[in-house]
Structures are given as C-alpha cells and as structure tokens.
Image (cartoon, rainbow, N blue to C red):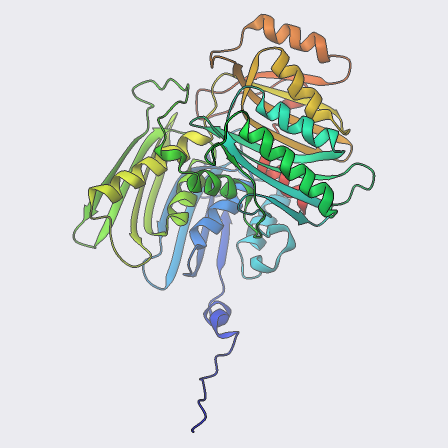
Length: 446
C-alpha cells in the first residue's frame, strides 16, 4: 500500500506577508488643530479592526472620526482621536505605546496581550483566580456575591459588573487573603462555586436564572462581558432599562443593501459616548461579520456610524429575520454600557471584605447598582458604582448625605452626575483623573 505524504506547510508562512509588508503607524499632531490623527496601514487579517479599536479605547481615547477600508488584502484606517478632556494626544509615552502596540511587533508585547477571561466559571490567572457569573439581576445581588467571597476569605482585587434587561454579568479577579496568590484548592473553589450558584439562583430553580461552570480561554474583559450577554440572549428580552432617551438620542439602527458592491450597510445613529465604536465593532465581530468599509463621526452629543459588512461566509443580510437580529444585538451592545443618574467614586485602603462592606452600605441605603468597576492599585482600592434607587429612579440628595456620613471615616467618596453629553464633566478633589475600569484592569494584570 502506498504511503500517503501530506504537503508540508511552514508554520511561519501565515506571517510571511506581515514580515514583507509590516504595519505602518503614524501619529500626526500637525494636520488638525483640535485632534490627533492616527493612521494604520497593514496587511489585512481577520479581526484586525477590533484589535486596533480595542487598543485605542483601552487608552481611554475618544474616537471623534474614523475612516476604515479593508476590502482586499490591505487594511487602511484613519482615526481622529482626543483624550477624555478633548485635547490632542501629546504625551510621548502614550504616543510611543500606540506606535509599538499597532506596529510590527505589537502582537509580541506583553502589555498589549488580551485580558484573561472565559465562558462562565472559575479559572486561575497568574496570582489571581478569575470568576465569571451571569444571572438574573435583583437589588442587593452584588452585595450578596461579595459577602460570600469575603466569608470564604477571598479578596476581590478587581472586578467589572454590567447589568442589562434585568440580567447581570460580572468578571471578578480574586486571590487568597493569607497568601495573596491564586486559589488552587479544589475544595475551596467547589465551595465558592456552589455558594455563588445558590446566590444567583435565589428562590428559583431555573437554569435561565443563573449559571456557573468551568471553562478556559483568554479574552478582553469588556468583550467578554458582551459575549456573556450575547450567549445569554439578553437582546431577546423586553427592554427594561430605565434610560429615558429624548427622541433625538434614541438609538436608530437600519440595515440596507448596497447592490453595486454586494454589501449590507448598517447605519447607527445614537447618543455619542466613550467606547461606542468598540462596542459596535466587538458585537459585529462576535456575530461573525466582517467590516470592509466604515465611516464614523460625532457632532456634539450625536454619533453617526456606517458599516459595510458581509458575513464571514461572504453572504449579506438578506432575510428580515437576520436584519432584525443584528439590529437587536447592536441596540443591546449600545445600551449595556449606558448609565444614567449618579456615579459614586470611592477610594480606600484595600482590605478583605471592602467590596462587601461598601455594597452592603449601598444596599442598606436603598441604592441599586447598575454598573460597577473595582480596581486595586498598590494598597489603594478604587471603586466606581453607577447607582439609582431600588425602583430605578434618580437618587435623592438625602440618601447621598446619609451614605457620606456612614462611610466618611474610612472611605473617601466623590459623587458625580453621569454626563449627558459626549464630553465628561470635570470632577473635583481626588477624582480629577477619572478611573476607567478597563485601563486600570490592564495595568493590574500586566
């Protein structure tokens, strides 16, 4: 019998085009008076747009305009960006980081590796254990989750929590209180998993209420939260968000067909905000759509984004069912990060049980958390909570005064109204530098 010989493929062949034509990155502060121009030219590859947008948004840059073209073998992007205060990017360290991260050796940089994550469950990451939970939201749930972790002597070093359509998804990084290392004792992990399952389940015995399981993987945290909600099909639920959009701000999404070039054209018009482009590109990518061309612009509080896409198999969105599903998924992606009302920024010396203590105080004062970010830098813990009252209404001033009195001796509190326009208001006191969850989480895990 003849021996079958399979053809040999050089494992480096896939990177051959990149080595011949390495990415070219330019950061231009001369061409425009009010923004920095970032140009990226490189060989096209799957997911490259999301990679670039992810790096820019992780630096907390505001993308005011963008022009995308990746039809064929070449990828060309132009981004108009500013910092959170609307200024040009002049910091040399930031510019150097952008050039390296988006350049030829960006994929080798330790500092730009994707953040760890997984489907839903518990997974050891370096000196921390990552926990992912998704379930039905209810007042006080975050307080109950953090209390379980504190009772089991787990210290919450960093966390990200989103809520949408009565569902909650969170990623928490914890370590052992006594060793400051990841927990690898199967008995303790099993006890934690079981107790968290019971908390998520509450009084109901329904798989839809909450799930916990073990899984492996590595994904950017914000993208992971989108994926968790998408897998949970939160976009199918009745929209229960309390956000009261003015008619001009309500997201408007349409899907049309470009007959001449064979694309589906998705147009998004909505209120502008930070990381809007990331959320939309992330969702399209995870739904297996490829962006060939795009135009993004913002005018004051408004954002207008247009994407020319096809499915990975080359097909366009031809059925009404496909179009409706994409529209619902993009609406959900836009709304998950939207928070109205007040944000509470708390700073305190880190200790085991701090998150449990803070969330307990919020619950006892009748506050409901719609989104939260927890970070630890050195010995300091920075917690940011977006809150409303238990009925979803704006928080009463007296409630904030009572909250301040209760925690004033141990925790520094800064209260901010969530901005209603594209530009964030300048805070006072220690919070002049806002704490953006993603950026702090990246520094923490680096």
